Length: 393
Image 1 (cartoon, rainbow, N blue to C red):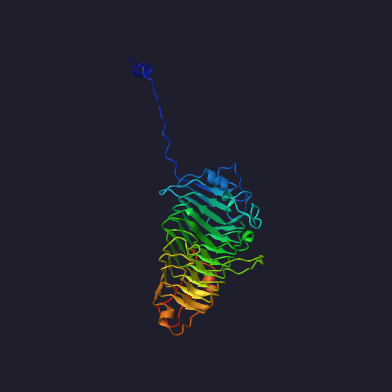
Image 2: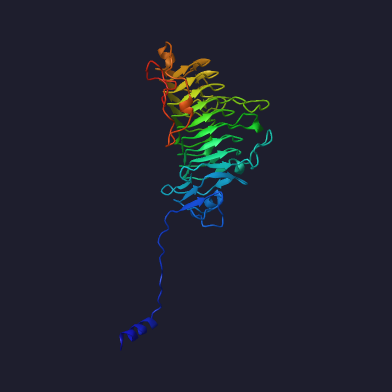
């Protein structure tokens, strides 16, 4: 029998099953552009039109790259699906292009006086997800800029949240392990609450270990620069700048902005005891205190930080906290320190004498950032005597 006949006979008695295994899909990049089309493939040459469409398509480990331009929102951006620890999802500006996400057309921009913003509508970007990286985006005119609740292990890098109708960036609820790096948040205000609520950055009303703020600049916000109101877990704050907060630049009636540079927790003296740690941070020219425990009864640690020309106390830690102040500089405030039961060593007021400064021009520290997003170095508020006291950037 010929070979072909043998094979034919064998095949006729066997049911063959052929399975094709597609290769594992590699993490992809989806592109969004103002001139795109949501029916497109999301490629660089056929980009999508909306960030929300890209979010609905992206998979763990994938990237959404947004081309430059202004994206006017009809509904807020919702991020509710998580990446994984080994494959986070990235939402980023494309290259060095400037991406502006504008929430002016959303509800509650601003809300009526006394109104409450429904949870799902909080934020031009509303996020309830983990293992994301958001980078290089500018979020403006929203009912909050970025609002993240129940969020773990996210990285927020080189964001700008400005001129929003509530807090520029708010992290809330059970949220742990988040890094907020090189944030600029300014000009945020809340007409619906007469200035009582809108901070540059809030990590508040919740808890979760391992949240870090590094390299933030928080200025000219209607309430506080940074607010940790009723957050039960320690927050680490480093290399940060807060200034010009708490002034009524918008002529809001019945103005009730607080005006602290950094409000480190508390809730009226009865709140949670959270041992926040602040290092190498400047707070200056705020309408109230430079740094305040605000009734947080925890063991706050503030070291190598500077309070300058604040309208009230430079370091206000007499609200029940057991703070430890080390090697800090207070110059030109209404008063240097309110210590209460806290302890202090090696600070300018412990050392005594006068403290002339090498530089008082904030132009470098408040101006353009370095290419990597870090704050440019200067001699701003460095003691002329060279003492290892106060912040250095």
